[in-house]
Structures are given as C-alpha cells and as structure tokens.
Amino acid sequence: MKKAFIINGHHYYSFSKGELNKELARRIQEQLKAKGYECKYTHVDNEWNVEEELKKHMWADVIIVQSPINWMSVSWKMKKYMDEVYSAGMQGQLCKGDGRSKENPDGEYGSSGTLSTTKYMLSLTTNAPETSFNNPDSFLFQGKSIDDLWFFMHVNFRFFGMKQIPTFTCYDVLKNPTIEQDFERLKQHINNHF
Image (cartoon, rainbow, N blue to C red; front, side, top):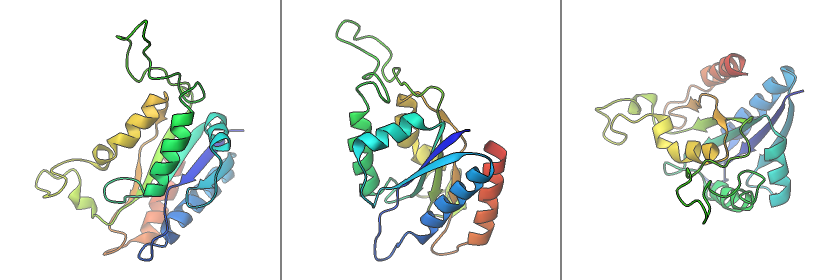
C-alpha cells in the first residue's frame, strides 16, 4: 500500500478562514484513499510534535503540501513548522547535513537528502489570477511561473532528495473564484499523477 502525508499549511486569519485549503486537503486525501493510499494528515494550525512529523516524512511515499500563498510565501505557522521539523531532520532523518564536511568542503551542497524514493506535490491557492503568471507583461511576476515564485519550497524538498509531482494551483480564489472547476481540475490532476 502506498503512503501519502498531507500537510495543510493554512493559518487562520479573520479574512481567510481556510475552508478552501481544508476542503482541498480533504479531497486529496479522499481521492488518494480511493486509489489505495494510506494517508496521514497534519494541519500546522493545530498541535504537532517534531519527532512525529519527522516519522511521517520518512514513512510517506509522497508528501503533499496544501497551502495558500501568503505574501508570496508560506504562512508563518508553516514556516515555523519547516524551521522546527526540517532543522531537526538534518541529523539523518531527512538529510545528512548539507552534503559537505570539514574534510570535504567542496562537496555538492544540498546533495545528502535521504528521501530519494519520496515524491512531493504542492497544491496552492492564490488570490492572483492565472494570467499574472508566465506573462512577461505582468507588472508583478514579470514572466515568472507559480513554480518560480515557490522555488524556495522546491529547493527545500530537493535538499531532502525528493522528486517533484507537478504543482496544482487554484487561482483568483477571492476576486473571481471558480471553485467547482478547481475541484474538477484537482480530481484530474490526482488521476494523472498518482
């Protein structure tokens, strides 16, 4: 049986209660279970334990981060989770340091990840319209993709040796939402990549 670990990176704000991210995480879990996956789940807004979270990462065949884009990044709760869990995992659980040593300072930085058989997927929600990305005329993103914007997250997972499943994104979720279509696209995305 394949194993999936889903992390809900949403942090509650009065203007953003997290219902969409919670529902997307629920649907991902439901679909994966229907495909025969065993699933574990963490919501960073709830209590969690560093050692237990490391065990979930090492247990999983695939890790899915469901997250809103907060100021072009993760929520502060998700960043706290990453700082605590991923820093603790550098002693061999997620990686063996940074790939270098005092004896070999010229080693390949970021090459000591221990999760080389693990895949990951980002599932994101954003207020930005899809037309803002991959558009050289875009004032803000200047031709960059959603994956360019979240390169920091891809690099973190590469640091652990993981392989990417294509990113899924719900765009324009506040000003011009297309939630039912997004749910259908998510279903197709999971069917195509899992």
